[in-house]
Image 1 (spheres, rainbow over the protein chains, first blue to last red):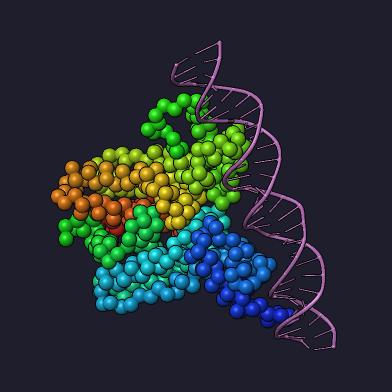
Image 2 (image 1 turned 135 degrees about the horizontal axis):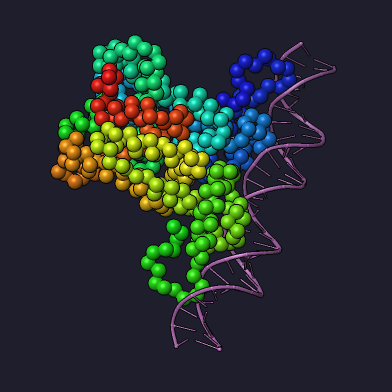
Length: 209
Length: 209
DNA sequence: ACAGATACGCTACGGGTCGTAGCGTAAGGA
DNA sequence: TCCTTACGCTACGACCCGTAGCGTATCTGT
C-alpha cells in the first residue's frame, strides 16, 4: 500500500484513484518480469500503467518503496495447510516459499530491496512489515500446531520462545533463499525433505537415515 | 581479478598496471563504504583511484563485475581455526562470517550482486568462483575435521556427501545472512551458540537445554 | 636502436534516467 | 456552487552511462 491508506481523516478534494494504485502495482510486477530490478525505471512503469510519471511520485518516494509494495502482495498467497505432522508442515512451507522465489518478479526484486535496505532504515521497516511479517506468521503458526500435537514442548518463557522462533525463521528462510538465489539450484521435494530432516533431527542424526 | 590474469600467452605491448588494479579495487571498496552500492558510480571510483574512467572499462564490463572482484578478496580472510570440537568450529565460522557482514562494504554489496546475478548467468559464475567457493571451503574443512574426530560419520558415497555438504552450507550461510541483513539483528556469540545447537541437535532437542 | 603493439589519460559526446516545476483540467467534499 | 486535491502533460537541469578519438607512455621482438 502507498503512503496513504490508513488513518486518513477524510480529507476534502479529489480522492486518489484506487484503480491507478492497482494498475501501477501490476505494471511494476510486469516490468520486473520483463526488465528485472536494475533496468526497471519509473517511466516504464508509468507508461505500462497508463499513468503519468508524476502520479507515481505522488504515492511512492521512489523505486525501492514501489517495488516492495508491488511484491508484498505475492507473499499473501503463502498458507500453511495442516498436513498432520511438523515434518510435513515444514516441507510444505519450504516448497511454497521456494515456489515464490521461482517467480521472476520476486527472484529479481527480493534481494535487491534487501540490499538497498542496508542503507535505508525506513525501507528496512517497510520490508519487515510488508514481507517478513507475512513469512514469519507461518513459523509461529506451525509451532503452535506442533505444540498442540505434542511434537514440540511448550516454552513457558515468552521471550525465550520468541527468540527461538526468530532463530528458526532465519534458518528456514535463509536456507531456502540461499539455495535458490546464491547456490542457484532447485529447491525441490528432495531438498525440502533433506532440509527438514536436518532441521528436526540435527546434523548428527541426519547423516544416517 | 580482472578478465586477464591467467593463461596469458605473453602478449607484446605495454602491460597493464598492477598498481592500477590494486588502486581501483581499493577505491571501489572505499566508494562502497561512503556511497553504498546504488550510489556508487564508475566515475567516482575512477577519480578516487586516480585513474581514467576508460581504464576501468578496459578491465571490467561494468559495476557488477568490478564490485564482485573488489569484495571477493575480503573473503580470503576467512579461516577455520581448529578449536577441538565441531560445535566450537561451527560457532567460530558463524562469527567470522558475521564479522564480514558487519563491514559496510560487504553489507551493501553482497545482496546487491546476488540480486543482479539472478538475470546474469556469467555474473553468477563469477560470484560462485570468487565468493561462494571461498566460504564453502570452510564447510568442507570443518566436516573433514569432525570426521577425523569421530564427531561425524564418514559418508562412503561421494555424491551423497557432496549433497549434504551443499545443504549444510546453504543452511549456515543462509541463516547468518538472513539474520544479519533481513532480520537486521546482531549475530552475536549467544545467537551463534543457539544456532549451532539447533544445527547439531535439531529442533526437538534444542528447545530444552 | 628501431618499429610494432598495447595501455593510459584526457576530452567530448549522444543517450538515457532522475526528480521536480508549472500549468490546465478532472473529480470529489462542504 | 466553491474549495480542495488528484491527474495528465510538458519541459527542464542534473547526473550517469558507455564509447570514440587522439596523443602519449611503456614494453616486446628484431
